[in-house]
Length: 465
Ligand code: FAD
Image (cartoon, rainbow, N blue to C red; front, side, top):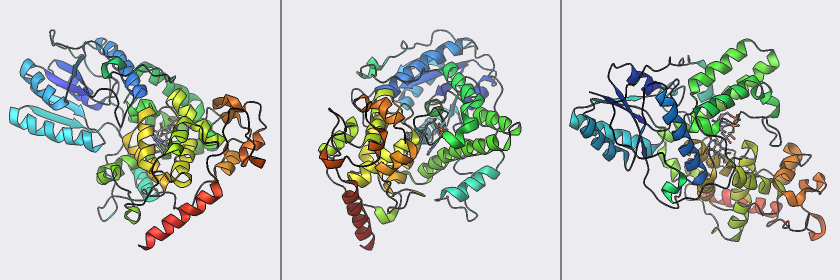
């Protein structure tokens, strides 16, 4: 009798914890993926990520064949579908990797109940992070709310090693499966954005490319959005196309043979990987962050109705060149540089006074790397409401941020062609005399100084209540 490996966000065969264990149980393995059945518009996802998912499933299906596996794809609620599959195939066990968000965890609880009812073994594994949120706590056993002590603890722990290749799966014939899906499955149009190539092979190439070059100078270049200065692995970590253990091992090996400057860069890189796990931990311990401000001081903070300015922000037409460049990069590529994510998010919340939850959702609908925990963490950080967030009075000035991070306007000109002949110095302050920077490019939709004052007053007065 077979066992089932339930693929979720671990769409690879190498160094996949649950798949590795399933393949060693001496029974045939049925690898299965369940497509969600929502149609058309969805509050938390969109065409870019769904398209990337489809490409990754196609690649996974081929890869599985190389180890005697056949991918089954079905549509519907995972738990109900798993129950049907168990009855159909007489499977004796289910293997899966645990999910970091509350929706996934709820399903795991339902699955565990179902397995107890049916007398089927249920094996959940940790795979997505180097450390499980329960593993890293303060001395008094409470979750960390601040990054630095979390990170010091994270850093001090031994890291898990990658798993060897899975064994042959010997998937039994005749399990019915849908064809490989396309975005049409959800009544979505193929994305207009130019997104990275999907699948484990492309992701592994990106990882090797990043390790052999980019991340060696990460410390110096990671904040410059015009440069190729970051690893661009977020969509691959998000969909489990690469393993965090393998990535960590490669970085650690490189560290051993590096000069001090490169070593410093690699350390900064590892710290970013720890931020990812810090936000997983925050979401794990405080799932209410999805509906409320993490910091109770700011629960129920008032926001403006999202009117015309929200539309301008989404389209990259606010008249603030760096903000608009970021928003257009997002629309054109399904990605935005981290520094610019912070700037656009802070602009939405502090200059336009629009609820971070609306920005959070817009990002989730467009980012190929849309990750519930990191996105929520990034938004609440920028809004000044999150765990270890920027304090509310540290409001970035989009003009001086431009001077600091895109002084030559290279990033801005890349994404806003109307501005290609404009002197980049003009991107660093509000346009003088009410004259637009170029024909077809709007004047700033607000005055930063005025809006900054309003935000400071709002937060200050709110805290007193
Ligand atoms: P690198 O700089 O090369 O970093 C390596 C990896 O570390 C990333 O791939 C990512 O997995 C992780 N990482 C880096 N920075 C952070 C961070 N600040 N928080 C958490 N993880 C981090 N990241 C997502 O993966 N998905 C999101 O939906 C997401 N939304 C964000 C929203 C806002 C408002 C902000 C400010 C940040 C958000 N981030 C998100 C974090 C960060 O912007 C991206 O991880 C990063 O830009 C991805 O590019 P990279 O792979 O080249 O990163």
